[in-house]
Length: 207
Image (cartoon, rainbow, N blue to C red; front, side, top):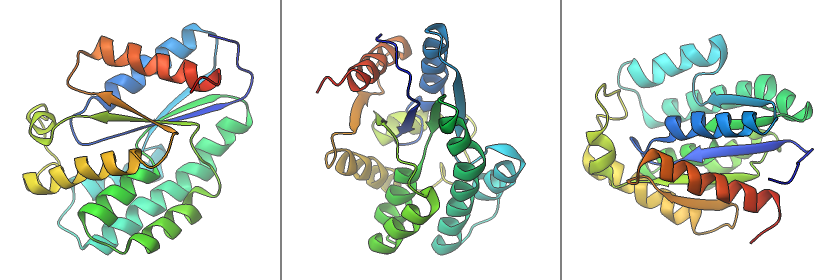
């Protein structure tokens, strides 16, 4: 890989059980081996603030869609200002498991909340901090859910909800060249290789 002095912000998105967490760790290891300083993070769940919100969102009681939306946004605003932006300003790589597009897909497309409002709220929360590349780890809903041994509140949504999530991600990814779609049914090593090549291409300006 060409030496890249500017910071890189990489986001991993996709339906449940696609293998995003494994891919994030593998990519962080690759980047570290190349001599880059890497921050591996996730949403929700970074820091004490994020951990508390994650517990409410994933392990808590049922909640209305609007409350769910605002909890995700609160976590994102805190995450961007206290973790992501400072790391990027130091010239580090940030690899994030889920970001703003997850909120749009889950809350606007799958939950049916007002899409314009969710977009505007996301824009406010990220405060101009846009990813350099977005990796969509795509997997059929039934395949991804079958991989989930310990299901959380969102995992337990009906299969139709998860199908909407998958189709929502594919729709969003088709609208911008910043996305690269990965086949999450492949072996983790193959997914990592494909993702790493996509990152190299983006860094080096290859279409």
